[in-house]
Length: 186
Image (spheres, rainbow, N blue to C red):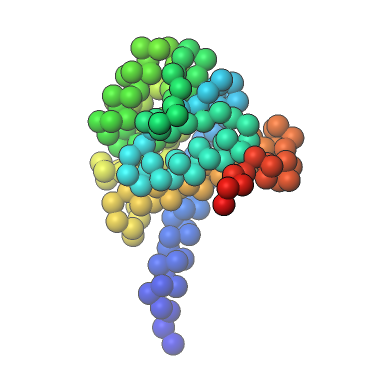
């Protein structure tokens, strides 16, 4: 009996994600961790499916006691020199995130960039760059069977959870302590 399309695709996608997550530099991860832990406030910007992945990251950072907002939220406070703008953009050329990074520079905020294009316009402004080595709009990087930038978006979601596990470890937070910060109006 031949393997189903679902089973074949599942194996390919898991292999792709494993390859991407293993390709990320430990040094870049450490720089991001230090920037997140040092920031008074964290602001996150992305568009489309990247924004969806980063929204989950923002929520979990708040659970860990790191004050985090999505840029544009109605309750967003002002950014300042002790804050971090975290920009997710595979191409590093998306207009809205690029313009927000330019604005953050005016207020002397630190910029971290999660990307698959480490030489992009946004990367040129960034203090911290995490390169996912994914197939981006440029066509460079780890190849995928998935359409467009799906692999980057999936890797962002899992990467955010891995970063949060490390932050919880460094802060000495147990799962029970983190759970006390979870929304309860559900």
